[in-house]
Length: 247
Image 1 (cartoon, rainbow, N blue to C red):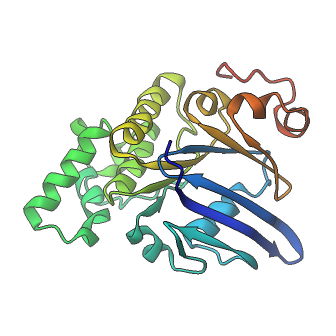
Image 2 (cartoon, rainbow, N blue to C red):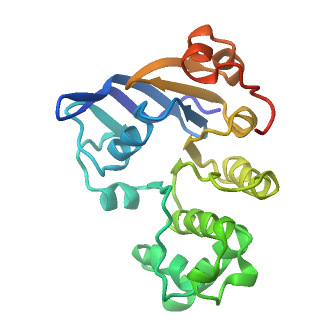
């Protein structure tokens, strides 16, 4: 793992009508690291992603990407700089093919028309959607829509991927190829990954470190083994649930 921080969150706070969604959240992510983010519902995980990705402006604190302050930058500006997020609710362009959905995401790369199509097809193949490339996105099952959401993010050639429950709704056999792909992206291309996830088996397998949020604050940050043995984390989130098996 490289020692240089590519994402730095410092003292971030956000309130909605007096409710503290995030309070003094601080952490750094090294280049090439995979950071899992866990916590109970309402802990502030998606709010944190919205701030890091530019969809929300924090009330306090800063977000830095690759050494530059990006606090308050628009989502498209942050994405074009190389930090790209996916969403829990997949909303592809229903009338367009899988291939065209992916190609549209990469248009800012200023490829030639031929190169754009080749790039989109390569990404579609990488996520396992080759057989669906020329079919409209509405024909995809849930697992396919999840892969399409990931493909649209990958088409932008990100340095950092922000994945919001990319495995939700998938059965174990459907999760494995996604986890394999994410590990390969880090290994071969050095992509940094921050992912929100409730499936602890996936967190244990993929994450180098785990950040635990509870009531808008950082409860714990450490290796998966350290975090899952922390009494505070067990009390706030894990309870008696096993951490090494799929529920």
